[in-house]
Length: 158
Image 1 (spheres, helix red, strand yellow):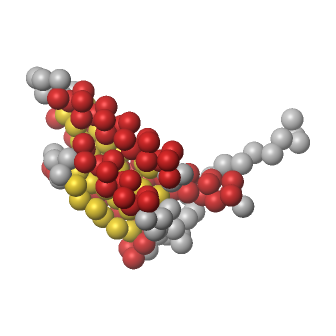
Image 2 (cartoon, one colour):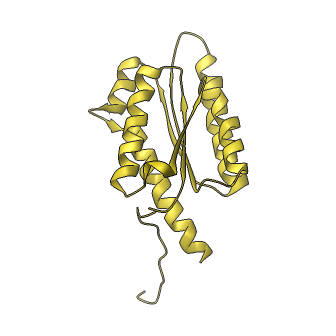
């Protein structure tokens, strides 16, 4: 077993460039996710000059913006932040599903890490808990995943 080589990422990508794609819909939640993402990047040595924030109307529009960002090959990682809160119609299912599929497709088609920090909750209270209250900050969590994947992909390439 000791001959097995393990490749994994760390959280060091100080020279990498990141785009944060953030939904304006449910901004009272998303702003906390953005703060968590930026704080996490800064704590891991990423300079503000290497962080761009792109605002989109809602979660449904995120995949298109992420696709354009990925196609430009300017960024090493993309962090998608939003909040889709269930209502009394099936609208939630369509928006959440298409956002999820679209962002996954961008990641695979362009070989770029896309952190999924889009909350999909049943209630506003659940969203608040995941945006910095007792369930942590899912914007920070998505950012850590992107940092690790950027590092891992660099190791896999090299």
